[in-house]
Image (cartoon, rainbow, N blue to C red; front, side):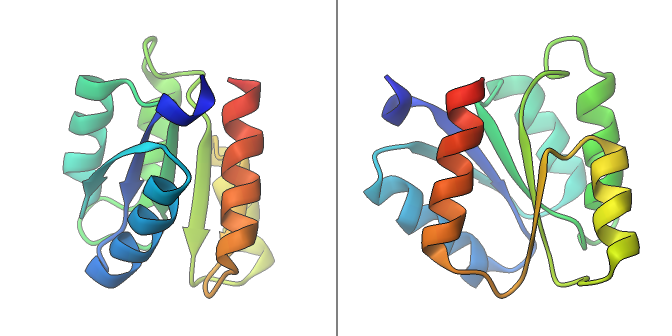
Length: 125
């Protein structure tokens, strides 16, 4: 059942994590969170989530690096990644896709759009 799937939210902004967490829990998904790239990859390895919602502008290790690590890992290589970013440039979106993100959304985003894209990515997994 899709709603029992685990989603890992990675964002250094606690308010953004809270908003996304509340939305996804309302939709019935299980949620875990990370505030930086280093803990994101460790948690992803530990939890093997069905989807990663990944901020690109993370302190320390950025989201592009996390996405490349996920793609290089044999356990996680097929895990869908939805990138969220305040970087609205075409270059940022292209780099995110090149790093392995299936979808990229620019902040601020509509929660309904996030829910729709997350659901579509989970249905493919």
